[in-house]
Length: 337
Image (cartoon, rainbow, N blue to C red; front, side):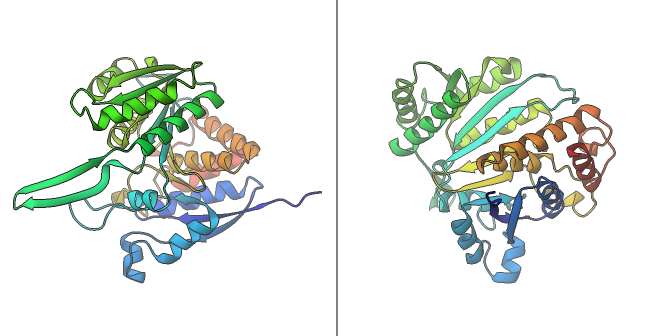
């Protein structure tokens, strides 16, 4: 009988509510029967206090070695301070595809039932290239970078995913009516890739119109292909359709490395109170299980999560319940049997 593989995973609990939701998710993952070896590292302000670095070199080395990481939320200062840990890690490991599935959880009433969207966002360039400088006092220039290589590979990722998983339609979201060169290049690359996938319907919508269309009729969309900034905005908008960022998973994928993360903030105001909802990180962990070809374990956790939500007896406060973080995890474990 073949020996069960042990998955070595870099674990970044994060700060604020990060350590609590991470602990809950690790408990659930360890109950699946899958063997894990966790390499835990701090990042952000906490890491700087200890190591003098916001991302310790040992963390980089761990991700390089393991090729997969699970990450809780890390606080990013607004308007000053250190650069986003998320953006830095994505660029460092060339995690060019940001993948966020948006689906309703059973039992939660929302304005839009039965939403089923896939958001695929280019993750390494665009307006998040980080190329900013002050031209003269009072004038700042921020450079948006769009390349043929980056646009083509994210389009290929989107179309290959759609074909593999039976998705029938892809919309490229853009502002090429104004940014004719940059967004125009993104669209030309997507159109060229689309020619190789005649089985998938291809369309294009302007970003501002898309936001209106999403709140009027999200069901017209299936898979959405977006540049970095547009994808960041639209993925949060779509999370709102099903109940908020506390429920949706996120994956950052490259050719040989992947980081799975909760996309919500670190919520320092409720940190340490055992009331945070670990659903987003748990759903991200389910994506990680599938990435590691642990489909049976992923299905088991997904079914337990949906059972707990459908029953509605042990939900956290943000979704109308009274349970704490650890109580919610206990309910998932009980549903797993």
